[in-house]
Amino acid sequence: MASMQEQNWDLESGDCIQKETSSSSQTPSSSILSSSFLRRRPNQERPPVGMFKQFLNNLRLVFLGTKLCVLIPAIPLAILGQCYGFMTRQWIFALSLLGLAPLAERMSFLTEQIAYFTGPTVGGLLNATCGNATELILALFALRERKILVLKYSLLGSVLSNLLLVLGSSLFLGGLANLKMEQTFDRKQADVNSLLLLLGLLCHVLPLIFGNSIEPQLLDDMDQNSVVWLSRTSGILMLVAYGAYLFFQLRTHRQFFEAEGEDEDELSENEAVIGFWSAFIWLVAMTIIVAILSEYVVGTIEAASDSWKISVSFISLILLPIVGNAAEHAGSVIFALKNKLDITLGVALGSATQISMFVVPVSVIVAWTMGIPMDLDFGLLETSCLGFSIILTAFTLQDGNSHYIKGVVLCLSYAVIAACFFFHKMPADPTKAGM
Image (tube, helix red, strand yellow):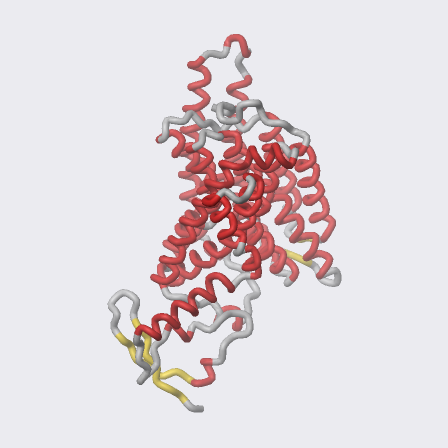
């Protein structure tokens, strides 16, 4: 079999390493773009034209490598509409919201590409930081505008969306597509995530009970300050628990979280398709764009609510998370259709755990540094919805197998919660509520 000599460039030292590879190994996969443009072939010059060609390849991978690329035109339209004022504020909100969906998916893709070069430990930390970067950036801008309830509803909605809508629709469609076979999964991963979600629920319930255990007429500033400090202490402990979870996942019990049943073709596709520095630069650029659109969303949410006659609570808790979780939703459903429920659970439960045990406490700590007294008391109605959702999901996954009726129950539960908050109205001054 013919072979050819190939030169690989070390990203850190810049040295050229020669090796012989079989010509048959250069056949590109049908489900992933070839990474051959990362390599320099013998007798092939790399003038500025070559660099420009590599830039175009990266541009194609980053922006056209997702089916959500049809929503990318919403990004420049939202920016131009805000800068030149030829759009109403509700349209800027809608376009910004649509533009966040492909950006969230592409940031996840770029984080995975960087993880190929940094190893599993640093890659896990990057995933913890950037996996839900859209929600985290939205939270920071909501904090800056002191829209605490918008922040709380958006984070709560992300957890509910992953637990009920993403997981429910995946189990429903996966069950219908695999009616003639039994769908099973490893319960160990689900048990670990359920434990962490229950710990997060406890950290929400205690400030709620603490604040309501005192008669309203006897509640003074000292008691309110105690709720805030309890929340800050709980936030620190939640971050400690999430750090232990990452160590558990990446070091001591990796086998619990490794998907089974991957064939050799899938394993061979697990390689980077874009260079380290290219992925890093694109990730920084997309983070800046996400920050711009997040500022638009936070600043125009009330205008959209007034124009569309939809409560801010419904927009924050239902619409924002659905858009932010669009890419995860699609990926979770695709794996369920292929009867790979372990990966589906990793996507849905992993994201819910990340929001609950990482993004929420980070928001509390950041608010603390900004002098904003944010607490973990999300309200009786909101905390009850969270508690029932976690318990319902835990019962759904307790026996290690699935069928479509479980997905139906989870989806209908999400629909009931959505209907509840459709009629729910926020307090008159959302910038002061929850503080």
